[in-house]
Amino acid sequence: MFFANNIYRERVHIDNADAGQDYFCPACKGKMIQKRGNVNAHHFAHHAGRDCDPWYAGKLSAWHSKMQSYFKPEAREVIIWNQQHTEYHIADAVLEFNNQKYVFEFQHSPISQETFLKRSDYYVQCGYRIIWVFDFCNPQRPKTIFIADDDDETIKHLVWTGRNRTRFIDNINFSKYNNRLRIIFHIQTGVGKQTQIDMEDYYPWSKWEYINPTHKDYCFARLCLEEFTSTSDFWAQYYSEEEFYNRLRHLNYAKDSTSG
Ligand SMILES: [Zn+2]
Image (cartoon, rainbow, N blue to C red; front, side, top):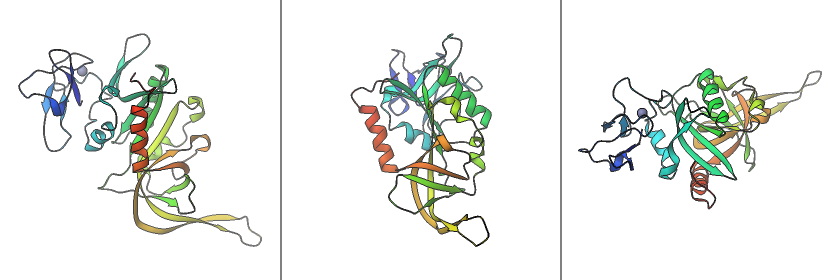
């Protein structure tokens, strides 16, 4: 975790923590260890084997830290109890806008369909809408998504050939969430083109051409879930990185925005 409470119960970010002081988990009240290594972003850790929220364990990548940084401090790492007050989880970020509370889940590592559904259902049952943001930029093994270089439309047609990490999304019945769930990919795109082939005595069919596979453009794409069937071929609302971060900043500091 990036925040913990000091002995005065004040919330302190790891970057402002004093190495000689004690800090405690705001959820389970356990004493935390300050970690300042080179592999993960600096963070507070529970003692070995004592992570109080297994869903939150391992959320320590540089990407994770960067995404959280676009949120005001009080909106990050928010503890969310269920209605019976028998279970809690630590949401990456929580914002309220248009009289609706949103949980943001930032997912850097691979995830199973079962885990995805369990977490989604938990936050929806707790009265939140959930916005998943997946990191598919992984620089070691880039899996480029190809984007139709058609026009200025913000809704883009995307095609993904190497998509093992996204297969868990395919074949989920999103209609049951009734717009309470959104999925956003942080991706790198190449440029492609769909061509319609019309041959005599044959049904028309379309062929995908990879125009520029080496072109790399990092962006965010919000999946259009209404007509979604598969991550190999789908439509998404396109945001440049700058547009997306500006949007987050706007949502954080808009007048009616308060943390949950
Ligand atoms: Zn804890």
